[in-house]
Each structure stands twice: as C-alpha cells, then as structure tokens.
Amino acid sequence: MKKPFHFLFSKKLLPLYFLLPMLFLLTFFLFSSGKDAKAFDNLTEDIFQNELYGNTLNLHYTLANPENFGVARYEPMLPVYSSDSGEQSEAVLHDYITRLSAINIKHLEEEQQYTYKLLERFLSHTQESSAFPYYDEPLSPASGMQSQLPILFAEYAFRSVEDVEDYLALLDQTDEYFASLLVYEQEKKAAGLLQADTSLQQVREQCYTILSKEELAQGTHFLQTTFSERLQKLIQDGKITQSEAKQYEAQNDRLLSTVMLPAYEALGDGLFLLMEDGTSTPTGLCYLPKGQDYYLWLVEKNTGCALTIDEIKAILYPRFEAEYMELHEMLSAREDSISLWIQILQGSSFPLLTPEDMLADLQERMRTDFPPFPSGLFSSDAPPALSVKTVSESLQDYCAPAFYLTPPLDDTENNVIYINEKTTPAGLALYTTLAHEGYPGHLYQSVYSQRAMSQDDENPVRQVLSYSGYLEGWALYVEFISYDYAAALAAEEGDEDAAYAYIIEKHNRNMQLCLYALLDVSIHYDGASFEQIQQVLSSFGVTDLETARHVYDYIAEEPSNYLKYYLSYLEILRLKEEAQEKWGKDYSDLKFHTFFLNCGPSDFSTIAETLEAD
Image 1 (cartoon, rainbow, N blue to C red):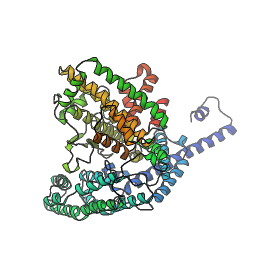
Image 2: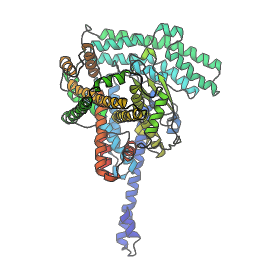
Image 3: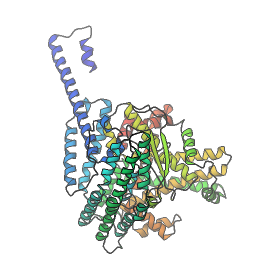
Image 4: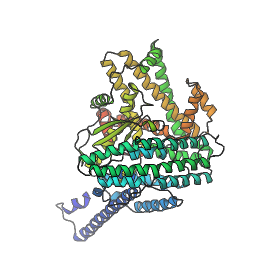
C-alpha cells in the first residue's frame, strides 16, 4: 500500500502510461480486500448464529441480549440427537471450510487474520472427527449430561419473562432430549463402542437419584427452590406479579414431575437393557478400533497442543522426575517434614476461614503480576459481582470439587462459583480451589477475555470455539501460584512451618497430576491394565485396592482429562520460557500474563506463532 502512494505523491512525476496501471492495481486490491473482509464477516456471523440457534442453553449462557448480536427471536430447543445428525453436521462443516478457504487471509485486518487462523485450525480439526463416529460419550459417569443438565437448568438466569418461558419450554423437552441420547447409546452398542457395564451402572444410579419423587413432592428439590429464588428478582423488578410467579412455580413443578422425572427413569431403564452381564469394566481407548488415533485427536482437541505421544512423554517424564526430586529434597531437609506436612494439611490452622476472605486475599496478592480488567463495551473495569454457592446434596456425588459458570459475553457482572463441600475441605485446599475457579483463575480469565473482546469489538465467533486446554491450563497455572501466595500469607502470620508445608504440598500436587497425566497416556495409548496401574500407584504409597480402582476407572472413563489440565499447564510454562528468552530484560510476569490473556482463548500453536512474531 505504501509504495503506490509514495510514487503518486513523489516530486518526480511518473509517466501517465505507468500511472494508470498502478491506479488499476490499487483499485483492484482495495476491492478484493474489501470483498474478502465482507465474506469473512458473513461467514463468522453465520457460524456464530447457527451454533446458537440450535441450542438455546448455549445461546442463553453465551449472550444475555441476543438481539444485540443479530440473533432474532428463536424457538427454544435442546440439541436433540438423530441418526442423521452426523451427516448434517458434516455438510455444514464442509460449507464453512469451503467458504473460509475461498478467502485470502492477506486481505484481512490483523484481528481478522488471528480469528481466521483460529477458525481454520478449529474447523479442520473438527472435520477430522468424522473418522470417529460414536467414540464420544455424552453420558460418562463423571461429566455426562445426566448430571450437567440439572446444573445448567439451576443456573439459567431469569432476566426477563421470556427467559422463564424459554426455560419451561426446554424443561418440557427433556424427555425428547434424553430419549435421543438413549438412541445414540443404542447405536454406540451396535458399533461395538458402548461404555463398560460398571460405568453404565453408575449413570443409571444417577438417573434414579438426581430427581426423586419424595423431594419433588415436598418441594425441596434444588430445581424447585432455585426456580423460586430466580422468580423473586423478577418480582422485585416489577416484571411479574406474585400471582404470576405462583403460576410459573406450578408449571415448573408439573414439568419436573411429569416430564423430567419420567425422562430420567426411562433413560436409566434403557441403559439397563443395553448392559450385558454387568461385569465389564472400563479399559483404554487403544482397545477400540482406531482407538489410538482417536485418543491423539481427543488430546489435541482437549489440550490445544498438536503433539505426538513421544513428544508428550518427552515433556511429562522429565517434569515428573524434577517434581519428585524437589519433593524428596524438601522432605529430607527437615526431620519433621512429613509429620509437619500431614499435621498442617489435616489441621484447621489456615489464617483465612471464609471463601469471601480468601478471594479478597487472592485479588490483593495477584495485583502486581496480573493486569486489571479491561473496560469492556458493556462493563467498567471494576471487579464483577461474585456469589459462592454450595452444590446441592443430591448432586455432590456426581460433581467436581468446584466449578465456575462462565458468564455471557455481554454480561460479565454476575458470576457464580460452586463448591462441593463433600469433596473440598477447608483451609489450603479451599484457598487454592478458589484461586483455580476464581482469582486469578477461571473467573478472572473469562471476564478479562470477554471484556477485552468487547472493548476491541472482536468477532464474537470466538465465543463458540472451544479451547478447554487454554482455560484449564491457565487455571492450573495460577493454582500453583496460589500455593506461593498461601505460603506468603502463613509467613506473614509468623507460621513458617505452615509456609514450608504449603510448598511441600504444591510439589506433591504437581507430581501427582503429572503422574496421572502419564497414566492417562499409559492406559489409553499404551494399553496399561488395571494390574499394571495398581503396581505403579502402590510404588507411590497408594496401596488401597479400592482407591487404585477408582483412579484407573476415572482415567479410563475420562480420556485425556488430566492432560487437558496438566499438559496445557506445561505449555504455558514453555511459552513463558520463550517469552523470557525473547523479551530479555523487558520481560515481566505482568507483561507475559497480559500477552497470554490478550491472545486467548486459543490453541497453543497460534499463541506460539503470535509470540514469535511479537
């Protein structure tokens, strides 16, 4: 662009026969550039809207005000599976890829080029999944929709009367939704890819206990109590009357009893009919046809790291050895290290007791090394509101120790962290969990990214691209930093023993997660048996057979899950080292964290390329 203008306005005038072709080329370039930019915007708008129209839950959790993003009035619907769903998805995906490949990336603005790279890799990798029909498992015991759907319903925000009616319409579709999942499981069995009997049995038990006639009759189920609580806000805002709220509550009770409860029971009964003799147990993916190839695909999907198994092992093994040696040295440095470590962790001596105090402390300690929130299009730079809630007793057995619900793109002001009191004790464990889920973890990263994107008017299509490795890698990265915060807090309180014990625990957890990541690879790619995994665990002090079985079954049922956290965390450390080398004396943790947050969410290949070009 500079050269033509330089010639046109230089003191030495060019001959007319030379000037005219250059004007033509310049006009043609500008026309082509504008055409590609428009085509890209149209494509990304289509992808964004299409992904949300077919799944009202995704739409509601992505946008608080869909009309501001061109999403017109829609019919509330759950994504019901059908036997031809795969073919339909492949056709749509092929259309996206064809349209994207027709666009010249060089004709796009810098922000568009970054989104183009993300989209190109994301669509290409998604297309590869067509080689693995029925390998996905939507009803796994630990993270299946049978336990996730009630939580999504319980936190479905009521911002308007339309939201209440959409919610009830979705509730009325749970029978069709679960029936379609059962069809999928039946087709999985026909393809020889059904999960193990013991896993199916766990899912069946959840189906029979997540909703119960007794709780519904008493009006004490969390889908009843949370529904009434959300209606109160609409009453206070004058959007509905008490009488209308009572009518909505009656409708909710009816749908829970006559639609959702029978849907759960039918799903549980249907899974029973799929079981064989009830004795088969989970095994690695490598025992399935194309199992190793699918595992590699899944690892890349869940981590955002395009690495071979040999490369993954070459990263994990040295890291495990380093953490093992660090832990060994700390335990050997003092005679009372082990007893001190156990005593401190089992005791209740942590200086902060409430989640609110812990979150306030974390926000203060992170201030130096992490950037403040951007002033987003819909937000100020003030910290968002946060509620810390406990997981309902009826879901404690099926939920993670804690989780954070990502707010809509255009409403980062209201955030919720759930704590599972059954599996998350107080003290250090709660403090580091709140760092993982809150500050500087998921809440901070999500709000930062969403406000930054809205501030820069970036393409919202990035909100429907999934980068769980980026998200979980960051949360684990800052969780480990929070152990240092905890040690500093203990030292400030004059408890040097506790500070020492906290750092011991930091290395212990790091080593444990690295070990589980290695076991993940061993089970799913190398075909390690339960007996082999049990031997490995026993060498590290896990001698209880039931505990070993739980570890093996969980990893077997959730392939690549530990890699999603730990390998992604190590990728952040690798990027950090590259930034230190590249930036030299200009490096600071604040600068790196700002760079990483401004790049994401993303896959790690694109972030690495951005760092290299920085």
